[in-house]
Length: 110
Image: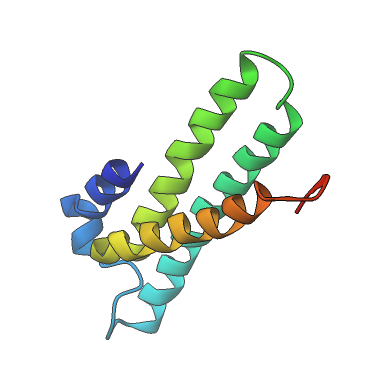
């Protein structure tokens, strides 16, 4: 996932576009926002498909892999060359939810 996001962020087309970069024309910012919003909407739709088909094998695996590719692509588009920071933030968020979710308190999970 990190490799895909880093590779996408370093593609010449993306680097030349400098999505959400500093000192751009306002019209270019609007175009960048549309690109990022569309990428996130497609990612959220794929997350909805993952949730919808989570108990249906092998669709759940297919939709989960599609979601994984789309989330890393959306982060790569939005973060650009700083994608490592975005992926680090996403990893820290997942870990901050996953570790407490696995803790047991007496007879209940937290």
